[in-house]
Image (cartoon, rainbow, N blue to C red; front, side, top):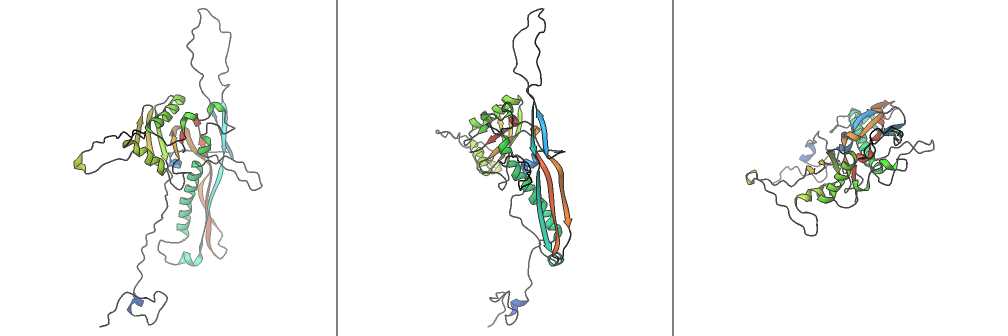
Length: 327
């Protein structure tokens, strides 16, 4: 015998002669899933400040090498030193970040799932702008000055700041040491060597944060399983069986020269899955010339429109206080 069913081979375009299914109501959830990594750990780690010009500058200085020589009794002071002879002045250009949006009048008026309207478009643009900033901070970009001919202001990314051979405008006395930059897949030994190199420059028991790409994070997690050498010595992990759980994730690397907290970098913003930045939060910042804001523009008949923007720059207060992993 005939039976009414929900199956309708002619739906959704047909409206007559298609049976009972033509009257079935749509079931569309109001939830909106955004399938993209949204976290900005490096930007969040930066201290926040303000810039006052398109070229933001700061100074560096260091102490001279200690001496163990004694002074003869009764000796007069006949030689003097300029204690600021090695002082350096460095800087970074600001960069303008902008995300425009547009929603038609009809789309803004209808009741949509999601929803899809001007307010949501504006909010989404802000979220995308933060990812743009994160990607630029993580990049190997060099700084550029506006030339009036199509080249905009651009900030220097962390990948270029942390370079033992440059940048050319950075005094060689303040460049990141070669030992603080790992160019091969890290092992427990080489990672500890990198942290030791950072310690040798600032003398602090560092509390570093390693912003790590996916492949690098997995590599460090392998420290709990093998020694990453040809012998492949296996580490034994003892855990209470009553918990019914085996934890192999590495959240903290406790070295001889400080603690390193591991954080997943945004995979859409890191230059590579093998890239990592060992950051001392005391010596990095992001300063804004124009804070993030939103601007609504005139509706010229097509619909609501506007943009969100901000202008700021990365401040690497001392390149020798950080490390980089790139392989």
